[in-house]
Length: 122
Image (cartoon, helix red, strand yellow):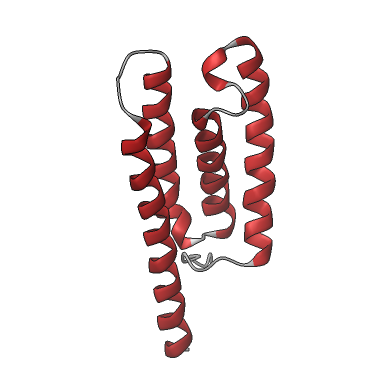
């Protein structure tokens, strides 16, 4: 019988996994950025895509709760930055970053609250 794995909390191993996958994704995207300028290594687009890819991988492998919230947020922000870079959408980056920071912070708060409830219930 298969056991359903529930979303839970970050661990040092999960954080290392997220970092490794994000770093690999950043490297691959930066290589593309050599030929396509919007994905150059230091662009917000590349960094947010890499972080979002790391969160998706971490969610699939480690079921970290905050990644369920952070991954879509990071990927949406990356798409907005990309559309802005290629002049399809005109958005001031100052308007995007607060949503990203507050959203990721809120995701961690939800995870920490969930972890405390799980510990108290166990």
